[in-house]
Length: 332
Image 1: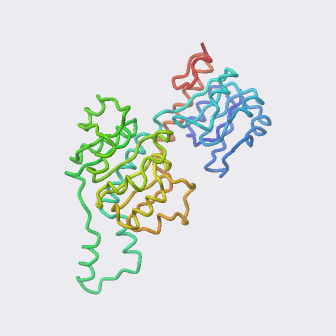
Image 2 (image 1 turned 90 degrees about the horizontal axis):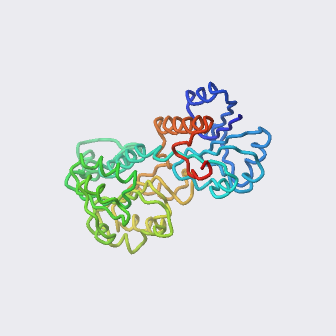
């Protein structure tokens, strides 16, 4: 069988697949600089006569599935919306994914953004790079005072969404001695108890939290959840962290709130317009830490997704049911 992989993948994973007798072509989108949208991957699959295709952001929609002879489709993402699961199921093609591949990475990244904002780390570096010289200790004193931060210990952190990532964030926050508020109508009560959290409604979370961090998916229920009215309810000293989805926030309202001092700052890793570059409007503000959607960008994430996909492919070749199959009914 021939395999095309356009996602980041480890050399050890590629070797394992080749050692199993598969012909593997690896063209990571990070190296080619190309993401296939619509039907643009169709001709590549046909020309290469590929039986298995593994992607990250490339689209494999109904048109491609119907016009190829794929035996297995895989995504290194947890819940891929770039693959037409319905069309694959209709053709009895198994689809495998990698749930939780970047859970730890994003959780740690979230904590890093909290600390960066609490201690003005980015603002301090910008200050020093902006031709700052110390002629006397008064200069240093002014800088020291203007960049004074706050400790997480004793603060209240509101977590919107206690799924896999939100839960891992909460676990790590416990070591900082914070009070944890949780807004999630679908939260597992045992998980809330495990992190010593308190389930609250959104209004209480907004009014009581010193830091609010978002970890819910983008759904009809959550899109636009936080806008001008919600920012007005927050403390003026509050920090907002978003490593989930940009659509949960009204970006224009957030920008205005940050400019007017309605809230104190934000740490943002997701935006409505991506990829992020120097034109991002939030970069103009010193009270915002801007990251280019790299919460899951770790070596361990790539290792995890590679190991999982390899295990899934090898299980399929043996006639077994892959562990992380999204449509197991096609193998029944």
